[in-house]
Amino acid sequence: MSMGPREGRTLHAMSIDDAYEVQRVLASGPGGTTEVVSIDGLGPYLRKKIPLSLVDRRVWAVLAECTNPRLPHVVASYETPDEFAVVCDFVPGDTVSEVVDSEGRLSISRATGIALEVCEAIEDLHRHGIAHCDISPRNVLLAADGAHLIDLGIARLVGTEPSSERPNLGTHGFAAPEQYGFAPCDERTDVYSTARFLGFMLTGLEPGDAYQAALSNETVVPASLRAIIDRGSAFEPSARYQTMEEFTCALSSEARKVLPPESLRTRDFSHRSTAASQAVRTESAEDRPVSHAADTSDAVPGRRRERRVAAACAIAGAAVLLIAVGLLFRAPLLEAIGAGTMFHNTDVADPAEERSPFNPDVQSPNEQTGATHAEPPSDEQPSASPSGNKATFPSEDLVVVENAWYPSGDYFQYVFALRNENETLSVDYPAVSIVGRDAEGNVVSSDQAVLPVLNPGETMYFTSIAGTGAVAPRTVEFLPVAPEEHQIRPAQSESSVFRVTDVSASTTSTGGTAFTGEVVCEKDGEAAGGVYGIHVVVVLRDAAGSLVGAVDAFEDRPKPGNAVAFEALDEKVPDYASIEAYAYAW
Image (cartoon, rainbow, N blue to C red; front, side, top):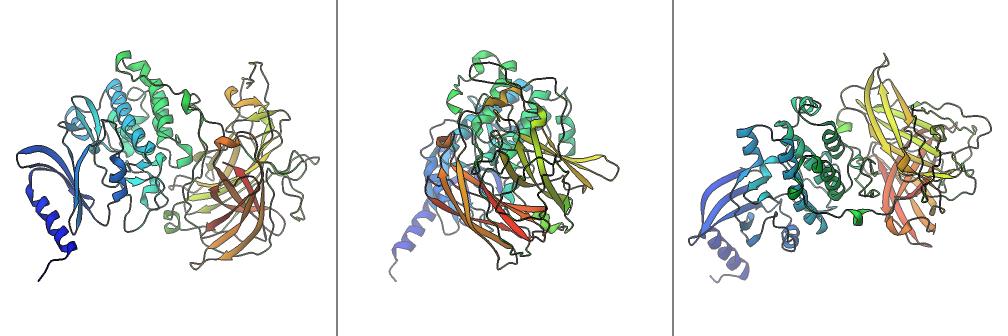
């Protein structure tokens, strides 16, 4: 019987596989096997054998273009009927996991130095569109020339959709929440794992209760480093550093305090500063929402959706204290623990002279401008202007004009509208604290939502999910955070203008609700060149016009005069009578 080309290639690959002599098995599990091998007296080499169902061959093709010496150098690859094998140069050394096991927690200077070297490798991966997805103590090797990042077995191209066939599970305790199939992995996935990895080195403990206690001990981890770790490993991707460069910049600033100058890499962060994302505006009245709303009265029940992680606005490298924003995804886990149906609307009436924050095309019996807001004490007078002159921004000018929330197990979904009532000043990255309290008034959860730039008179809607998953709140407060001085600047130009059209609701095959429509870009506004996406928020109201919920979607930004379609999915929404849709540059 003659042998076909396929059979010939298979036998050839198997003969290559058999030619390698296994000297040591470093790791073995469902994700594959990592071995130290040699061939014909040459070596040692590191061989990673990955099940075909898990491998992404594109990653290994792109990896060949990466030049950072702290990444694996691939010398050969081949494929057997069941596995994809990659052979790399072997770097002798111990993993961070092994070092901590034998020596205990690392010094601040040593841990910070290792983390910066790992960041260097990850940045090169991200520049080539690869997310590592498994940054953990066992995957960082300490060699004579420093740290090396190994094992790209579950690495993915940024934005690859998760699937049951190829999950991005990573290492428990270090894997970001979105790796459990809730949303595509991106740069922020690796930011999360790297922050947890840094915390492990400083505490000597894997993430858990003891880890959190050690992390909170300032004799173990300085508060400044803990703040970097906490932000980098935030549950919501939008609350993390949005790029590895931003994380590196923040960590480098702290490293200069503990590392000798000769050990610091010379880095120029000025090129990382990008134009801030802008809120959009489509109405001439200064107290109306910043995009056109589309209305329908079609009430469709549904189930909570899985929200995909979306690209967020970038933050200037120097402004390391700002929290970048983006989509706060919802996890299917919430459905498993039960979804509540009671909805809370905690609006408080604004002065009668205020105009409605809703689009005038939406008919509502109540022209309401409810507001729930707090005025955090602040002795500072925030200001910033190109000329350096001080410009006062009263904290009461940042107002939550309406809000609502409803429970989902021990989590809760919320929506609020934030308005800048100042007549001349813009706020970069305005924030709102979402505080959950129990029946006795004790705080049971505290989250913070951060929005893009809010120009004078603009209103922006935002929706997400919050809570700890341990205790359900009885009440929820929405408290605008007083802007810091560097967040305030004089308004210099108008925002972009988007018009939302043809919005409709329909029931999906799984019983959920799909809100669809189109967004037309009518005018590019301030910093349009640095903004590549739009955030669409579909606001839900009851028959009385009160806010009851919202869903959202992220899409590519259309060019002026062009339109882009959107679809916002939710597996369970509260009962509603009408919907509005708003679009913002993001």
